[in-house]
Image (cartoon, rainbow, N blue to C red; front, side, top):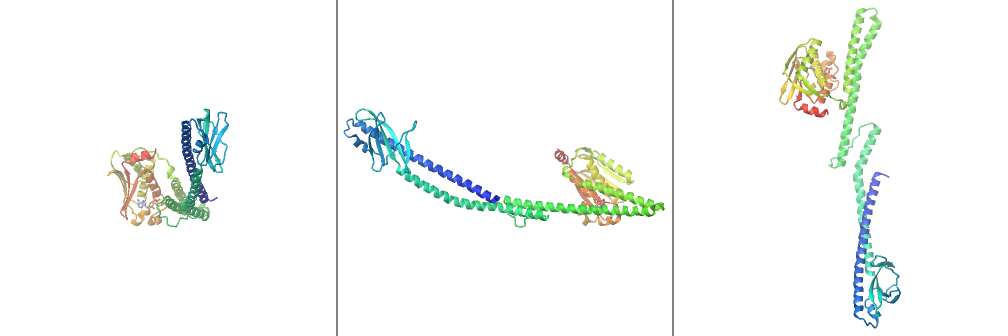
Length: 456
Ligand code: ADP
């Protein structure tokens, strides 16, 4: 059974059962109240009869007195102390019936041909001075009539109410389920076709179902973008790996052909092979770094002496590359951060400054507004303004550098961006062609507390 039918059948049945129960309750309540009223009137009648009977000690024709108190469509029986009927008077339309009042009951009630019949008993003194019981019996025709009328009205009401309930449930079911069915169709299409289908009909509503539709479309968009990025990454990666492999392959062949006889060629080939395999090693290491799911990377926050850290990092680069670093660092700058990752970020930026310039590199650090600012300034080739927005994309290299053979991979700044996001550091780039480039790291001062909370 379809969900729509299930909801429809369930809600309709539930509502109908509720209506029937309520109507049945009303019916039963009315019946009980009417019988109680009739019972009280019958008791009054009986008490009046006893009073009248007692007033006339010498009643010559007791049946005459009894007759004047016969309930409409009823009878009065007089029962002696041995339980025998002494006399009985009845109205013309009375249908005789045998009844008995149960223990702890105030009256007896039975149905005769669909008409409730009630009986009460009242003790009295008979004309001969004996104790007797007057049985007053009445057929409740009015109660039966009103009860049947009420039954008719309630049945009509139930039917009248059931029709809009059934219709509204059908409409409601389709209002709720139509968008879900549409969603299901789109999802099935996506699964079978392997595409990222979206719900194209207008989903401008403000209700929850429209919200689900929008969220679904956003999710599909995100999945599609991710998929494209992944494809791009794989094709870029294979392209980047192909170049060093081709170089290694051709030099290895050269080595095979002429390397054993020509030492100069052998050296050149081995140099190239070593350099290209190193480049590949770096590339693969960087790709692995990027492939790590950053959401699950744990960062270990600690108090870092930034002034000292900057000095240490530049000293290492100075020794490795024999380059001049000019430091303008405020003393005793401390930050709460992940020291290893900050170091990694600084290495990427300082290494780029070194690779893309020949002059000195200036490193400034200090408190600026509400931030600790670290500026890495070089006086090198610079970056064209229109290429700045793409700088942090994976495998992106400034066009001019692709030819320059600086040996870059285009992954360094992509890693730097991920690291800075992880550490909540903003990176600002300013550059001018042939003047130089400055990468500025902005570490917010309240960054310390934020990171501490995040890392817990
Ligand atoms: P790469 O390994 O090529 O250096 P990056 O992602 O680190 O990769 O840098 C991307 C590109 O940005 C580089 O190829 C280069 O063209 C440019 N670039 C980065 N830093 C500088 C800089 N300090 N000066 C000039 N160009 C830079």
